[in-house]
Length: 385
Image (spheres, rainbow, N blue to C red):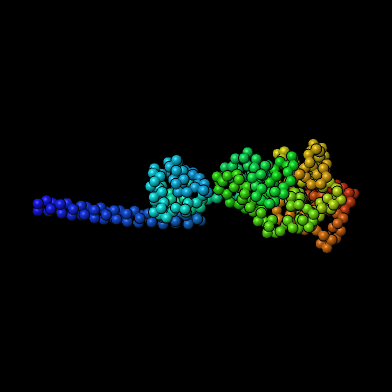
């Protein structure tokens, strides 16, 4: 009996020693893991800092794997994305380590570049950093198609047909007040053109088409409210859509110094129910036809585009929609055009023509205008010769 109790005591004691040993061994290994992990995190932090805060892992590195983390993705969804791309072998371990390291809820949406050689904690750390965006600047006066093509040329993986459909049928964006006021016309190919605010933007390469357009429209909404353009337009008897349409013509026609004068000339013509006769409208049709714009309009273009409502020579009033995406200066050139105080005789000017150097010559009568055209075309021809 006594031997049996002694044996039992020894077994229990040995088991306790074994557990203590295992606990000590686990503690040592855990400590080593945490210490080495912290060292890796420090090294990764330095690598990001040395790269101006952007990920040092790019599509050009050896074995690079591109993954896209959607905005709504949680840790479980991200673990599946990583497993599907053979970057991790155990999704459960990834989720446990994410909680242990405090990374849950910290992962950043967007396009990241990883490698199968990276450890779980290196992957997790990298995914908590903002991915490198594609930064693009769109100057005033660009058409929708020019902006779209620039995005494609700079690596945005958009579905061109999908984006074209959204711009041409903007029902998805009626939560914006100004979109609700857009006048649809069978010949208005791009109803959202004019409202894609020219500015500098940062995109994720895999951003979807709707999100990209909403980025533009959000900026437009902010600017229209900030400057209270709607109230000024109402006082002038114009809708915001009419203002943007006319501003797009002004944007395409004039140099910075002439913007308010050009706006005044077009408003004078509208008030007298005269055709706008804008070269910009013909050049827009040439651009849509994949042709280069011209400094002076040709009779051949006037004839072949004669039935097109964007031809402001053969159709009175405004065209069906904006020719491009105008900026603040052009919009204000319409809303606050030159007046008699700043430009004596402002109400009488009805014509202007390009001098060939980016500026314009203004005239009150057709005779003066035709003389100006002849003069500057002769000068231009001599320079060409």
